[in-house]
Length: 330
Ligand SMILES: NC(=O)c1ccc[n+]([C@@H]2O[C@H](COP(=O)([O-])OP(=O)(O)OC[C@H]3O[C@@H](n4cnc5c(N)ncnc54)[C@H](O)[C@@H]3O)[C@@H](O)[C@H]2O)c1
Image (cartoon, rainbow, N blue to C red):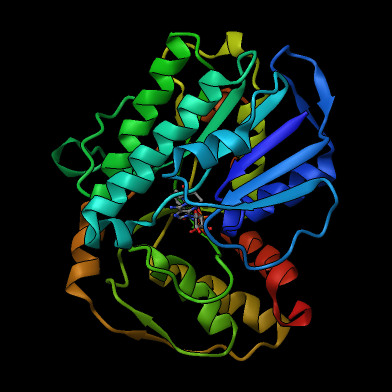
């Protein structure tokens, strides 16, 4: 079976590819488990060459319809994970590009899935940025009205609706994972308005200062990358008869403040003899303004009922990050 991962050169896409290679199989459109024979990674940029003969990297812009159709192909036994996206900060600065990449690109992936033989399963990476404004609730669930207050969130909400409607029409078998902010992203800060969420762990753990653009008591829903990768796969594997007309599932998450993050990394640092860099207040009105319109908590009970995993304790997420990306591996 062939697996397509758009955004396969990115943080989550590259880890999803590694996890699928290790797993070796997925449920095919016919409902039977099939060996993974090829993984096609479609991304604008790749930071490392493919290390497994089953992986093919396709460097292309998702908004180019022919490139997406070529990468997806016409095979019946196909699974598609659609992760390519501009991030929130970029979408806010570049409205036209956000529509081209996130909406036109999404439509290209969905049309290519529709054109493929059989009914491929399509897993779409959405975001809790779909929530926003006065409709938000103390804990936002799959029943909360989606009134995103960012261009990024708007594109994600539209793609969720497209996934539902293509599935209703029988074009493909779609599912959307509405992701909380995923920690701890390795490497450098990115242009996401939530970049501080990883930075407040990553920079101090690397012994360097972290400039914190939001309040110390700013609460934000977060989960770990290992749980997210397992969730993509788990949602792909759910039999279609367990899904009804709303195929978007918000994942369970921890409610994390910078104050809590600091307490947890201090505990880990004390146990491991690490010298932490400081978290320095650097209020940024633009970031704080965007974050003010994001949910502070989510209710992922519906995803859990479907069998999707909950994140481990925050301290475990930090320990997993050090295991996977810490100084000893650098
Ligand atoms: N990481 C998070 O905290 C988080 C939270 C909510 C939702 N998400 C969603 O999960 C998905 C994966 O996130 P990630 O953290 O791996 O992000 P990422 O930025 O690391 O990966 C996204 C990839 O999309 C690619 N891309 C961007 N524009 C493209 C284009 N025009 N054509 C082809 N490829 C293009 C980028 O090069 C990048 O490799 C995204 O859809 C993101 O919106 C992530």
